[in-house]
Image (cartoon, rainbow, N blue to C red; front, side):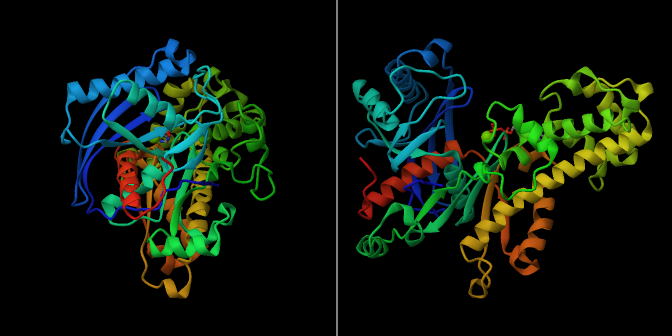
Length: 436
Ligand code: ADP
Ligand code: MG
């Protein structure tokens, strides 16, 4: 787990104008967020393309481009902020970094097609700040943000409080609020802890990196299908838990089970298709389609077999004549089993967070625990939340589960990052050192 150095959670009353910068997806995104102080906010944003040349060139060229984009945003899109005050910026940098302070972290390695020279081991906040300063842009990068922490902050602002931010999209990860005294790896002394308490800084958001849980393969009940998905993935023996849960892999597990049934001659008369044979040939979104007829009151529930048949023929290339009604029901059932298993594992992370923070104890009576979740599985996979809740009842009991509030928290890298910049400012007011 990784300390975020974030020791301030919004309650919804915060006000002000902050910038957010998001690098690591398809585009570079610059946002200006205005916090209205009533749990609401407004945002202006602009996307900027990062060319292939920039992705593999000198790192200073990349950061000059980023600073130039911020400059363009401020001059062209405009700002609500007053001229003389420095704007605070939260920087979501979605690459592996070793964070050493709220506003400091060194790049461990590039991923996702980036390969800039002279960057590894450098402090990415310093790189950004230097580029901003070279252009005399009146902006200060005050927080380096992991998107799970941003998700937590966004949910907290909207709901007044939040215990955990989680992402169930392409991958999965979560961040939660922990007592400072329990973070033994930080090596705080008794005096440090006392001082933090006096400053109102006795907790910290922790980035769990839970996707990497059980990479040692000692706890989770792996099947042969999981082993196969892992073995031919680009990162074997890594992200073990994630590979049973997230969007990138659920479809692939389903595909492998279906192929096993085909090879066992019990499904589709023993025939596969080009799509089903292809590595990652079954997108997780297809599971939503296959299971649609089993969502109560859905339009597809009128004739389940007809709907599933159309999915199998149109999206997986099956020959209509070769698909029996029983094949349709079986294929949807496989999807349902893999998806339910994934949601039940997701519930384990939620339940673990509740237990670790004492929410299941008798003295926690009445305490609400907000989980701000983001990602396509939460948003679009039918029954994902219901499956999580059903598993939570098994793990935590009815009463504790009732106090778990799951809310959809979108845009951790936009409004969430801006809230991290706001938190940095508030922490400095309380006397915390944030690294700069
Ligand atoms: P990211 O985590 O990169 O921000 P998303 O949250 O959009 O991305 O999640 C993308 C993942 O969600 C993909 O792996 C995709 O297969 C899966 N996905 C997209 N739509 C659906 C859907 N309707 N049902 C289930 N999974 C979906
Ligand atoms: Mg996302």
